[in-house]
Length: 164
Image (cartoon, rainbow, N blue to C red; front, side, top):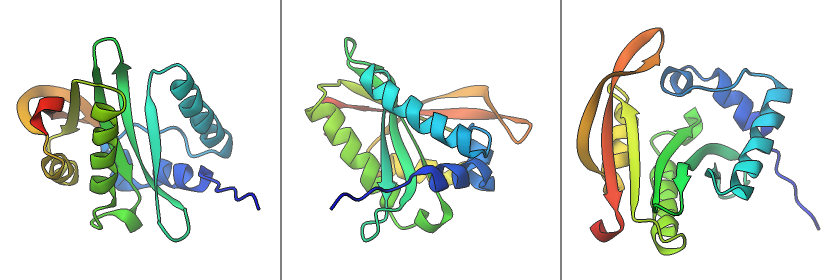
């Protein structure tokens, strides 16, 4: 039997969720945009430009978030991790577990040397994820992010293959 999980509802929900939109740029909340978003993610994989994983509820397979390796540069051995989670996944450790698995794959499977993780100052949840996954503080970019019509500093952390 073939099972098909439709990730479009979760992508659409992420486009309208106040907390996600506060910290992440999202496409418009439109079914065609959600389809395009998913197709772009598949194309990114094929081009080795960005690798993404749906973070899913274990029993149902319903998508509750996403973890990605953006700005992937296999030749240089670098990428930038990013993530988002719908309200029902927040605080349960799902994103942390998923990001930890992705970093293990990135270092062991892809042979990456360095993964960066950046988040807007004030986004405490992202800071907790970074800390729990072992990312080390490296700096602060002043007024580098715009969300909610305001500028935010961006906190920069990094994880090296040799840190593990």
